[in-house]
Length: 302
Image (cartoon, rainbow, N blue to C red; front, side, top):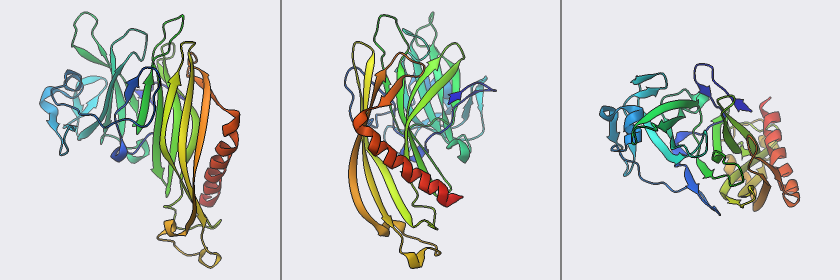
């Protein structure tokens, strides 16, 4: 799937902001989930995005609120209030550039997961002066890893993210690889895996209830521009009794009977747009099993 520019750069399949965490950049081996980190209203990047007068500290320590909704095409934002949920530096559009991704929640509709991510670039002739360059509407990741792409040719950073969308009684997570394509001015992504749960559907004609959760993941990179992503999952599942198949089920979790953990991995080259990592042979059966659960939920909703 590719996300291009209509009036702004579009990107879908995002995350509900209540669980959002900062994007982090690592060199070499990366494991686990992103930390929470501290944000500051004195940050010149956030001041360039929201306006210094519009920034204030949030209720929780290290959180920042923008009292207006920033716009890509003008300095003054529109009505609304946004929580800054992520900020990370990298070279996203070309090697060597000083750029920042800033994720906000609160300025978009539900179908766009309430937020989006701005790309800002530092002025090459004025250090410390930041300018808005692009907006990825609806892109609000829960976990990301920004990964340098080593090799003979200098490349922009790749991004690996976990995103979530909740709707229709279901939660859908995606593990994605993303990279900015300067030829099309688009952020291009490839989905490695989809997983989630059906615990909010209420009615279960097929009787299946399930929840697949991420326990953490990491990316290993090598000097030959190869990468390996490993993901750990917790799978919980069960069946609704046959005599309740037509009832509204308020607590489907109570019918979960089995819990197990799965480990899956992908490997491949980082040089692609986006990086193309393929499932390892030992992971294919587990991946197929997770995908079959999602298909069963889709059948239930029809």
